[in-house]
Image 1 (cartoon, rainbow, N blue to C red):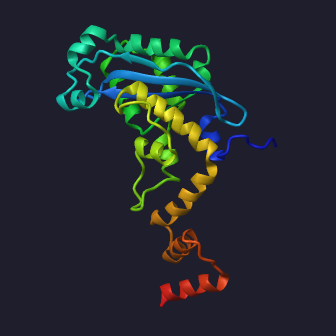
Image 2: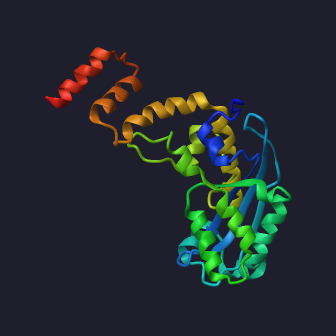
Length: 248
């Protein structure tokens, strides 16, 4: 069997061996969670799973059926007037996204940070009877929640998952701009993916620290993991002693 060239076998499985990835970020309305903006970066991977080339970021505004909401406007600087001036319909926006990705659309994985983007996609489908079914279903079928993947290995000292910004800081990635701009968030996500696969030793160190924080392992095992993460030497005798203490 050919040895995997992507450092993480689990990631390779999630990618379904695709060599094309589209990093996505959707912004949505405050209450109806309809799509109001799309940011994307399409890339091609080399044999090692690293990004070998990428297209210029894609950004487009999408008209929603409902109002944006004050909180989202403050967060994204997107207003209802802006959507009226520059926005296009949801169906048109998805067609433009497909055109941006190109011929590899059906053979691409679509990566977001967190699952809220898929909720936005689902709500936009529900509010638009003319939505392009094939395009939307292709994204839903080949979607990967990168936050769920990477936060299996990275946790803060209290066991909490990392945000996209925190992940970028961990890998010393310079942020591409202000958060909540969908194109900027898509670029940051692409940079995070590439830094992750190129820095597996750093991931190993963080994973060793994270393992004792999950809390679903038996206490003796958790204690051994804590000691190992602090550089202690564990022997069969010390492991048995920890079990005896737990059962005492």
